[in-house]
Length: 170
Length: 90
Image 1 (cartoon, rainbow over the protein chains, first blue to last red):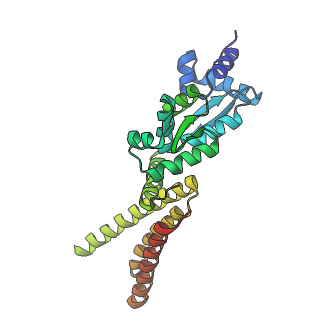
Image 2: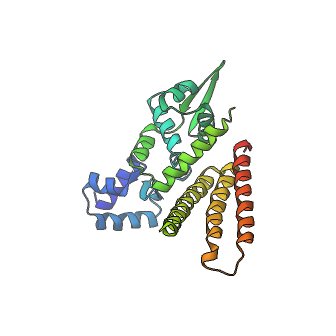
Image 3: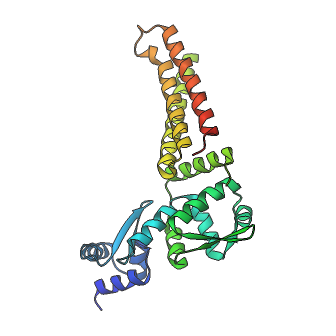
């Protein structure tokens, strides 16, 4: 199997892998890897997305899926909610208790994640349970690699602060 | 000595205000929340107010009364923006 085929196979099996991780796992030099990835992307065999200073690689046909995921993980509270839901389904009070977020903040972020199609809301009487609606492995891999910039952290804090102040609930 | 301390404090306020303005703008772009846009404008006006207050250093011909009126108007607008940001529903 050629180096390019190995890279393609690895990206197909591990959507959302970063450039550095790919170099480590396949033990390929950075320059060499960059060259093959450039060709694979040009041929439309893989696709990439840059976020938080890192480049993530996906197999083709993953555009809609990764676009939604990348939007979802660009917010700190949403990342925390998603990681919590990766452990299992949770209701609003469980999320609030574990993450120490106000109900208004949770409502806002879960609504956004729902609109993106990353989570689903199941109503069971008065209880509302949230569950993940995406590949857990891909999600955890992307979130683990994601390192937000200082501006993103400040912006996320400001969003949550505004939500907490206004106390807007469903 | 007091003058220099005053300029240093004003400079720090301008820098901090600019940082908060950038963060608020980023937050608005991420969330699309109108109330955060109002916060961004409030922070921006706060920075502008501080610059206006020190405008006499560049344009000595400007009367201090005019600068004071403009500065107070900015203060009122900043408070109004904060108030609207808190009560507004997006």
